[in-house]
Length: 621
Image 1: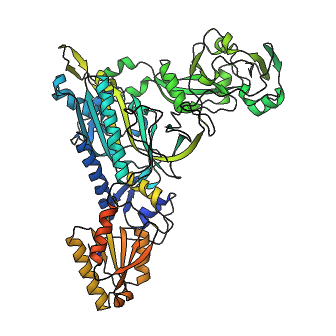
Image 2: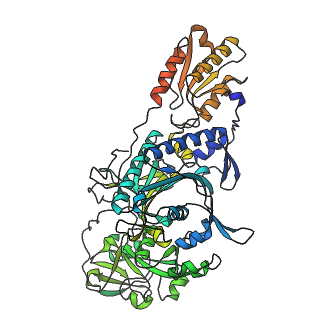
Image 3: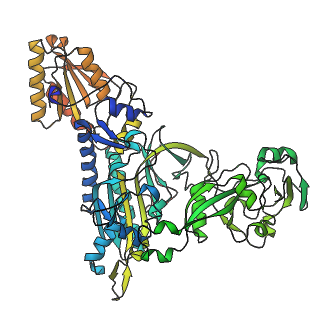
């Protein structure tokens, strides 16, 4: 392609609302155009990159035995009501009615649609297993879209769904998809990790996220420095903490503690480590009143089933509540919790609780049957000090082993230097960008929607399902966040719009122009994607665009050195330069390109699994 014929609108100015380098570069280098809040159009270069990524994903899925379909972007709301997700998904689900007042949603994901499709056509275990995928637009009505293509409202996603007659076969396919995803991100030349994750609104278990490591990532990853354990902080686990010395020794007693409210103040007053201070966190949570009646609800009435209540979570004084873990703990206790919200001081007072003096002793008498959950690290702990449930009081000598019944669950955020539960090594935090997610869904959707097949015993059974997603459009900024430099875009060999960019230093110099165009035709005939900068522009401006746009893996400068039989070859990644002979330049470039497009072995790993079957890929960050 000739540069003069392409739409590549570059800009020297940094967009005002752009924070991340990928957002700035995609706009400045002419890859995307913002159409509205969280909505972007892809310009020619952006579309080329998107298509190359989609092709890599499609090839890997086909090789793994999946079949491509294309589901409707618009989904009848009744399917979401049937699955029970119509209100649980929240305001991010865009709902609307057509001219006949039929309710629809714009699909942010397609579990309901694919379940209905397979329910319609697959009737016997003989047709299983089945893995169907699509590369399709999604819409999620983000309350605050930001960071360019990283968090948009409209986006392109590959989502796949598998159907099985046994849990064992689902696990087999889960590992098949794990291997396929690892191949995809390795071929894209990315440094990534597969981490344990929370399943969120999609549900299921056996969830793993594929994270591109980048300092700008929104997700915090917990990674062991000694083994392959890796998890999103929302799902991370740690070994039980070692108790510091000395443990406070005291009989159960109540003390007056005027103006002592914070953990630091409690520790200073009683001369204890925060480990022995029992922190109470009171949260308000929303939940569905009666999930069993969802099938009979119309879209307009479902919101009336949402109610609120309060829960108390206890942790050690130097720990912090991880809200996703708190939500999961509430769900385990039978509360179909949707979200948790901070409780205000007036709300606490209405419950008979006093901020700074909330404790475990006698709390049940104050709040009735509302959930009280203790962090797993507190199991059977003694020597604790907590609030006295009266203003300006605390109780010493609290022994949780003496309580009649206690609910424990993982609640605390895992901190750096906590101990790995797998190997005893130290845990550290890294930042990552989620680009893929795989789930073992089980029968969550098939049971809710009556999607069944006849088994070998001729009895009906719900499909056992898996779900596998990749953010196709999200991979554009993810690649740049990891690879771009201070001068501009840097793409991997597999994702760059072109392999070679020829830069004719002075198009008015006939020898340079003729040689550059001849080299361009030669490389094109060899099947090497080539961009030729044939513009009548200053050489400095052309080089600035080569660095900013990063449209090619290699740049070839045809300049004054051509007179002595030399041209300059520049690798965009690192900007390393060397001279090559002009008389056989096409052969040298072709050999270099051939070596560049081989799949890359990038760092990735599996999370706390040690058998050969469960750890198909090893690697270190």
